[in-house]
Amino acid sequence: MSMRGLRSRRSRVAEHVLRIPRSGIRDFFDIVSQRQDVISLSIGEPDFDAPWHVREAAIFALEKGATHYTSNRGLLRLREAVSRYVERNFALQYDPETEILVTVGVSEAVDLALRAILSPGDEVIYHEPAYVSYAPLTAIAHGRPRPVVTRMEDEFRLRPEAIRRQLSERTQALLLNFPNNPTGAELSADDLRGIARVAEEEDLIIITDEIYAELTYDQAHTTIASLPGMKQRAIFLHGFSKGWAMTGFRIGYACGPAELIEAMMKIHQYSMLCAPVLAQEAAIGALLDGLDDVEQMRNEYRRRRNFLLRSFAQMGLRCVVPRGAFYSFPYVGELGLSSRDFALRLLEEESVAVVPGTAFGTCGEGFVRCAFATAMEEIEEATERMGAFVARYRKAGA
Amino acid sequence: MDELLELLKRNALETPENLGKMLGLNADEVRKRIAEYEERGVIRGYQAVINEDVLALDRVNAVIEVKITPERHGGFDRIARRICKFPEVQSAYLMSGAYDLLLFVSGRNLKEVATFVSEKLATIEGVVSTATHFMLKTYKQHGLMMEGEDEYERLKVSP
Ligand SMILES: Cc1ncc(COP(=O)(O)O)c(C=O)c1O
Image (cartoon, rainbow over all chains, first blue to last red; front, side, top):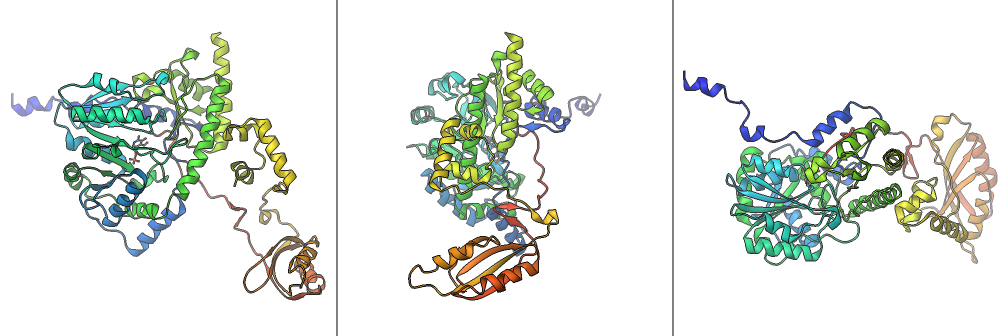
């Protein structure tokens, strides 16, 4: 038998891709999509359209003929605007020529960062419940994801000691996301310092996904990259999807040490070439226009957050106060249903969609994610129905 | 502006319970603050924003630019208040620039408004001149678009 014959019996899909489980979000999406008239609290993007000034900047650029490739790193005007923005708002200084890369959203930036720093078998520590892409992208980069569990009792904070317990010879990086999707958690100044110390002592690269940095409700956000000694080991990822409601533009950026940005650029130039020029122009518009639109949206999110929290309290559900992002992560485990069953029955009986907490890691069991990136009227209606549902199941259980 | 007022401006029918939940107050506190605003004259009333274009009403709306001679005592205020007394006048503003008062006026038909201008308004002592513009179509008022645009589709579940 020829060697070719042997080969053809192997799987056509790469083994490390085969091993990646189906996304819990996709799974749930397929179920929800079959239903009409659903009120959805399961949408992880702003209900607002991008601010008109941003859209206008894209239209204007299109009229001028912005239809071409840009530099691999992205338009210099955008990198300069990003540099000014992160300096003013996060006390971070990056050289637009060598330390900033414009990407197709934070999604691509996470992928690039992992692929740029991981050799096969290297480990990445991240915290769960977590955004859905971290573990799969680590695996795709031939790395090993090492989750650290965060808990409701601890307000989903990430403790330095918990990170230390996951360290091994192969730990290459620590991947952080605060404000957090799906819990809304932020880190305290103490936690930040403690985590920075671990990174320093263990010589870890920090990849920090700060896509919700503008959306904090009680206190301005501090990035770990701005702590002493962190800049040389941090890859700061940010973008326009959430704060500026620009998800469909697909635009973000990475800032970091020139060596790492250069390595990311190496991959980006071949796999992506450059981020779409119109999205880049729109992003320039967003940065030049100031933060008024962002602030208005933030104020609206804050009111919705307050409303949801009160509603959960009235239902008798425990929920950590989300300090940022636009997600709440109430605990529904007391009702005797798994997260998935809770979500399925709520959809079935009340036509309200929430995401089972397990989509964000096994430790999400007992929780559901309710986003408040949905109009107030819908949140009012959804919480009313959810309240009736919870009361019914409590009674049945009692 | 107080967040409570902003919310009421957007939707005056929102219940005190819901307003309280958004603002971290209880419903009674919200009622009390609304009552205070009413008392102080900050809140002057509550109205629906109506798209009259779809109602086929016997009604025309016009804006009128009015030039007046200010008086030695009282400036524009006395004449402006007098003009505001007419029920035809819906809104009135003192303006900078080429004229002094801008009036929003409505009537049953063109003739009625024209009569109001020539017989009531122009004859007031101190009114120097008027220019009347009839409104043809309303696109946006009070921050609201008069024709709903189809919402662009958003996925029902996303990460
Ligand atoms: C934590 C987190 N990171 C990244 C993304 C994706 O961002 P982008 O649209 O910039 O690719 C999301 C979107 O939901 C997110 O929640």
